[in-house]
Length: 194
Picture 1: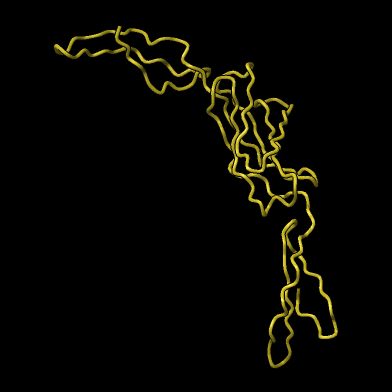
Picture 2 (picture 1 turned 135 degrees about the horizontal axis):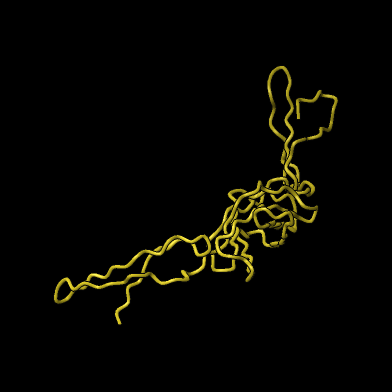
């Protein structure tokens, strides 16, 4: 608080964080200077409040077929504002109007995996992650686009041919598989000897 006059024996301290322990000291001052501080008060915890800080770095992707993986940066303890802290994960297919909502009751959580056989590979979803505690639901992050997991390639490479290069080497070639939105990127090929 601001400096209070010498006849006042109490002051209100403002702008403290919810659900945090504080201790206080008082110092007397006059025109000569500032005296020694009092002994610290007993620890006092402020009351809990609805959390106001949303998780950051909401993203995701990857995972297996029929999975939507959502990740975020956990909210630090000093910003949880009370007991019973957890996360609210909301997502919907891009273009849909209905949100699916899941509650993650772990303070340390930084990931949620939604599994559903009806999810097609590499489907875009709108995702947001919020927070809650025993006082109520707090702030939600802004919307992020996250893609569902990829599927394994559904077709084999075509035009495989082999050319003998030496007594111990054969060069194998094939036509690459075109990128497909439903199966994703081809990250590599495996050549098998029969």
